[in-house]
Image (cartoon, rainbow, N blue to C red):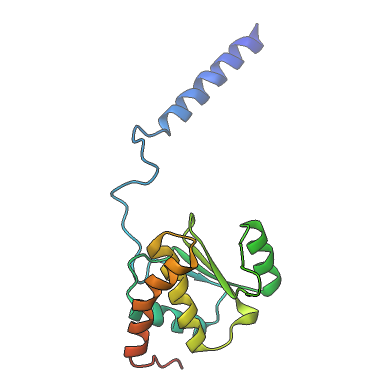
Length: 160
């Protein structure tokens, strides 16, 4: 008998707590939430110089949609992550970075990071995926054209 009483009391308490944590708003994302901006995204795994350059390049590009996070990861982890997200790379191509659209995350293979210019060129492409909200390479390239033009017309950022 005591077990039944305690079980009932426990379930009623849990139900009240769980009910209090639900929202009557059917939307998954609150409309009042602020949009990501120039400095609201997170950069993980980059050196100070890489992060400074990346932020400067994204600021110059003025993308329509900012990533929520940019992750520089070692090649082994990059390959595992690409496999986990089922990244499709056309035959004959390689991938040094990719965008996971649902999480608005850009993954960069830090072992294949070539130069500052190539970083801006390919980040523009990845931001194109976000702007087009599409996994299509041609859609991303179309959106990236303006970003690359902004980069080309701007003075080069100085990283110390």
